[in-house]
Every structure is written in structure tokens, then in C-alpha cells.
Image 1: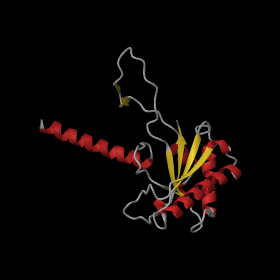
Image 2: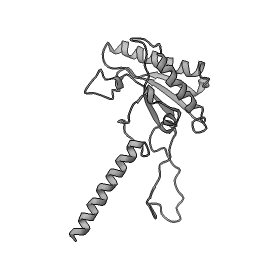
Image 3: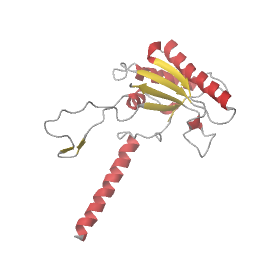
Image 4: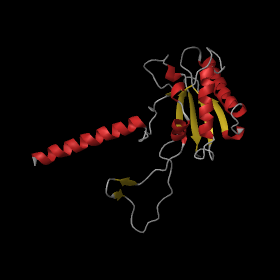
Length: 198
């Protein structure tokens, strides 16, 4: 009996380690807001495509030799719904207190455009959200975040040829910080691209 319990704990620990490893390499996608923010040098077509492509929720658990399912025999499956709202959070850089894109931001956005033009993402529309840290007045932060989101949309449509009807922009000001412990953290000044699935 003690061997069986000991073995079960090792299996559980091994599963935990495997899930953690899969999360690190991006094979398991979390459904919470703690997803990593991509830095400009880490942005590439594949990472953006994977982050923005909707996935279907599944009622089945696939294991190594069999499938566990909660579906009743003879009952039609319900249509799949997205497991989470697909989004890519990116540190797109701008000139200080400005909506002017830096050279590295333009390079990163060129890669974002390749992803948006890919077969997996071509059918979708996207919302570009600008975020600011809480330094400065709320009105100034809102205006800056709106201007930065609009600058990203303008670059993607005018420079990279994304159809304007596929993109919209919105400013969030400092209302959705990722790092509440450090208000000035760079991840609080980010651009989020959200796939519009409704």
C-alpha cells in the first residue's frame, strides 16, 4: 500500500513538472491575465500567431492510450467555444511621452503584420489596446494610451498593408496594470492585441 501511494505521488509530481515544462515552451496556454508580455526582440510571426489564433475548448481529456470524455452517447456535441480570448501582450516602445514608434517597435510590428496576414489569422479582426502606467494624470494617461494604440493601427495598415477594417484601437489608460506591486514597471506600458471572436 505504501509503495502504491509513494508511486502515485511521484506520478502526480511528474505530471506537475511536465505541465510546468509545457507552459514554459508555450504548449499549454493559460486562461488568466498573467500571461507573459513579449519584448520586441522576442516577437516573431510564430509567437504572435500562436497567441492570437482562437482555440476550441474541448470536453475530452486525451491521455497516452485512451480518451476520457464527459459526452453522453447519442447526444450531439455542443459547438466549441474559444477556450480563452486570444491575446498577445507586447512591449512596443515609443518615444518618451509620445505616440511616435521607435525603430525597434517598427521592426517588431512588421513581424506582427506577417502573423496577421497568415492563413490562421486572416479570417479575424483585432482590437489594439494601449496601456499606460499610473504615473501622470488619469486623463493624460488615457490620451497617451489611445494615441499609442492608434499609432500601432496606423503603422500596421499604412506601412504593412493590413486592411483597416480588420483593426480597431482603444486606450485603456492605467486601468489594467499587470504589475500592481511596481506601478512604473514596463509591462504596465504595453500594447495588447486581442482577437475579436464575437
